[in-house]
Image (cartoon, rainbow, N blue to C red; front, side, top):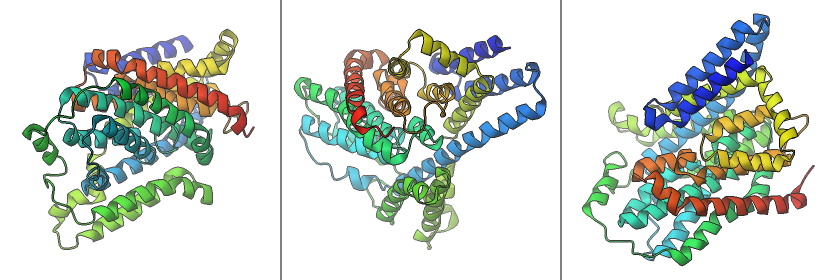
Length: 436
């Protein structure tokens, strides 16, 4: 039975990794993998059905907490975007010097990613550089650095990267501690490639052509450069709502998804009240109901499928045995987690982190243990090594039509240098920051 489930899981994993060549959406592969793993476990384990249902319900409650959190966050970001709130940030960038602009774009991406999330930030920043960097060859380097900066920025924030969010909701890390321990390594991860490009980047930003301007005007519901009523209010409320989620959890000790739903509820009410004169049809794109139709539901279902599959392996204790095997083979958890980070550039980091959470017990490794913090860093930033290794990378690849081989030649080595530099910094400073 165990062998069958492992084979199904590996096949599912390969289908997810090969999503583009085989033209099957990874969400479909993930859902099938999750359901088939549980079905085989239920039919062949010999365990009482009540016990299996109880295990499934327990896992589903944990999975639902992550999914509702993500859906709330996605809706808030879509709502702010509908009001063109992010343009209040992006329109203030005026420099024409490519190197100075690269620094500004990377720092804005880094901190925006920690508040929104790395995928959304990448989309916002690519829309921005289309206006600022008409030269396509130069823009590819900016796009590559946006992937690195977005992933580095997401790793140190409990709401910045889905894998860090999973560890936070699961209780493996606490919000303030992850910020304190991973901020410096994440900055180093971004700075190393940035400093290298400072000396090697050559070329001009180019002159704005009609192609980019028309593309940008098409963005933002066809309103061109007209400012939409309430954009400032929605930006401050949206960002304030997202930042307040860790505070809500600390004060109330309730799960983070409730804080996220509270923030969404406030924004929903405000969005309904901002344009009272508009008719229902006209107002719909600017309400949470409209935003909910635009969120990435396939991604939510992808997480559901993956987390179901991993929870089946956990219930069957396959992950526990695998952890013991790694422990006896490699011995050092730091080596194992560094390799998991590199592996996350090839396969999705969500199942890798989900599997790691199942592999290591919280009784052995309590919350804020080095293993969880280092996993958040490695899984969050390791995905930058290949363009397909992170959601941010895949989004940028699609938007800017970046060639896999171009990224491999021009950006991968820089991303890897940043990854290892940040990892070394974390391992050096951890003994001084350790709470356990």
